[in-house]
Image (cartoon, rainbow over the protein chains, first blue to last red):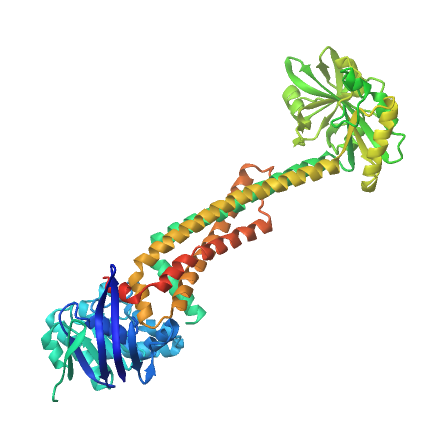
Length: 226
Length: 402
């Protein structure tokens, strides 16, 4: 489903070119549960941003769902993000002035989904993430775990093909982190691909496929025998 | 995203930053209110002046001694002589013109007026019975000057309302004697209260026959001759006849100025309209300053909302939509501020109208529209840059910051 062929991503630092990703060739399957691990600056987040179409490769080809997405313009990429990709961030990134329900509604709102259907989907999501009683609370009135649940509900509101999670438990205590991971893994069992970037080897091992990155290259690619 | 949703989202983010929004609204609405109030004042002044002129009388032509523009050289000018006086005979001669219905000579001076122990300085106006008709004066009591030959003096006078109040109080004035300088005049009438009219307050006047005024002030000269043309179309003819007749009277010399009320009116109208425009323009500058403020605050808002913008992009908002969101915010803000400013302006105009009841203060419709339009346009125009900056934001960088 996700196919990288000879992808480079270089940044200009001063007058030096620094390669964050070197010649990445990678194929991820639909519904796959993949973790990306590696030291800081190894290019994990850059790779995730490229997969999420938040960034463009300097060279190489990225196919998503069979379509070459590297040549698309910003607006077309935005549409693909809206329809196929969900994001879960370390710092939740909820809009502070909006209630939990409205934060979940945001992708539907931006995509122009009709109000009746929006309402129905949001109610359903609030229910399945146990947030019904918190629907009208603003993010600063929610606990960390609740916030990340809102963020996950938001990420899944458009029924994406793939969920990108960058250190989703990095800002949570252990118990809450486990809870959040369980939620994410439930989504995998429903057929959504999950790509997880993490520092935590314990979390990384839970994925069925583990990528290890060093210096912008994938140095190991192992699968758990389920 | 539907327009309704966009508007709701925009109003939500405006309400989310209450202080910022209020400050921007304040700046914008003060600008709009300034345009409304200042043009209302200008327009009020214009209407006031026109009203004053109309109250002078209708189809009015005024003769002034002397000439304000020179048409060649005449001997009198070379000898340094002043213009020939206007005299009563000149005034009477004007009645030869078929375009002129009636005339009223006018001679003006100041004299000490006394009644009993009370005395004060008054403006004495010497004229004829026609003045009442030409100047549309109203009498409160008694009668106006008698219809007599303008050359014959008569010791009667008509008092302005203020003079009557100050010298007679509640006493009966009709029939009483009033001393003007060294002469006595019997009061035969009191004018109704009229107030200021072109710098001459009829309430503060004492009116006596023109010949009596000439005797009182020991002069033959007239200050003005007021002419009423037969109708509106005859005004120009009356003016030309008056010039012609007075030239004959003054042995071929053009030494009087004849002005028509219409011409003066048109001039004042032009001047005051230009003034209103100028003042409104200055106020509009303050509006555009408010626009700059909006831009500045919007830029800060974009910086503060970097994360939110990055998030919207990650959630699938294309750059155009982000621009559209910021535009909507600016438009909404400007529209609300504009409306608020209009209300503020109307209230301000009403207060001014209350303080100066004689001034018909009301903003013309074009100024109201222009103020609102300028607010909307500056608001949207100055949001172009912030909106573009927001749309161009790199989502990776925007989301990387906490």
